[in-house]
Length: 195
Length: 402
Image 1 (cartoon, helix red, strand yellow):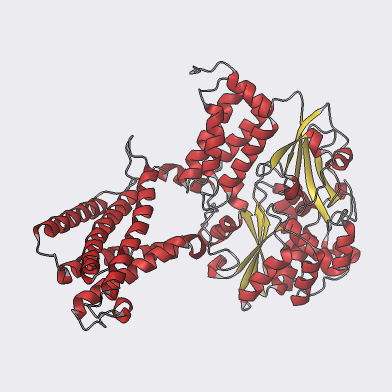
Image 2 (cartoon, helix red, strand yellow; image 1 turned 90 degrees about the horizontal axis):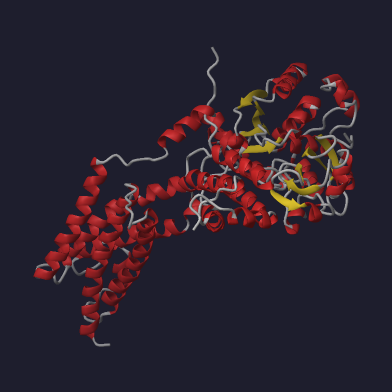
């Protein structure tokens, strides 16, 4: 494979990762909103969230590996692991490293959720809200195609979709269909206060 | 009632054994320590609350985290509607249970003991309260009697811990398990009262004695609640490893003709009467034979009862007892119970029977606790043992049958 192919792969995989990760964030938010319709059952949201997230990890791996092995960049493996250790665009590349490592933590804890417990998993899953914006800024800062029209459209579309989802999440109380039944049951099994 | 070990001594009509009688009959309680845990390990004693988990292993895991600040919960919530054995044991031999709780606390180095007793079990609560008053002050100081709410899941280990912590007996997700982080965040041993009573006798008589009580390589004795179509329903103590037929004989025999036996309770399963008779009641061996001893329920269904109606009633109960914390449990059990009820009324909707099979598989493993799993395995046993009845009911002209 020649150097040009590696470089194009890095850029392409980066753009694809952005789209996939944005979709993952939107689906994650939709699942907390318990979004559903007759043609979109709830398990579809969580199923897609999981599978697209795993696909995104693959594209990110491709994005990172091709960038590192490209002899033209001389990035080295250290830059892929240690944030802000790259001689080249130290800051912007460092953001990418951070975003990826946050994502690895989120993915790894999701795969062993049964072992670490729901509370720990959830705490780490909140890092998604840090990982995604850092990744977007990384793309803006160092992307070769940042100012091409097509990339701008992709960026704009992703940012809009995520903002819309997160905005809805902030404004709309997530409806809990079990709230009443749970309250009734908890009342039944609660310690009676003796008079 | 057979009086092998737990119920040895005066007959049940004499009521609760006093502390003086208890001490005279059995001698002083030995100390609980690490050696006792090894003895329990060798004895083969497994938990009698339903899960049949080895007692020695459980105590060891609490001890390893204890640092002298563990908590022991003696679990006598007994929320299983068919079970009477825990309340009977507490009502007749409260000091065996208290001995076991004290031994457990010493062995796992706990400084707090809670006697968690189902509030609906009046005789048991009264006997335990009286027994506490009879104890020397040094013992009584370490023990607190805590009435448990009357509900099916209140006796689940995480629900018991949650009740002590927050005053609400709903199960919580694991991990962390109670043995890791329980009451006030401390390692907590939640142990069924019958298991504790066995431990109190094993501490005195040794592991060899306990093993010798069982038959066919099973260890010890077990308390059973026999109900349904038998002449003398009630609580009996039998050697582990005896057959279902022997148990039914002790209960005065079957009234009429047995169609099936419910083993293990609402979380157990139906076994056809033909198969059940020769099955060995051994908590370790039963799962391999397709049964489960659960919390010691043996309930006989005769051939005049409608197995679908009885199964539907049990499903309704289990659906109502969902704590409404997890969607698959709450909605799943409600749908399963509704479909079972329609089939039992011989007015099924189109596709109810295949739906039951499909939904049952979808609900398993999807709750914070094992409540949905238990309900589903019960339903699946009904679907298999009463296959022909279910098929006939599904063929009945339904409201929306095509």
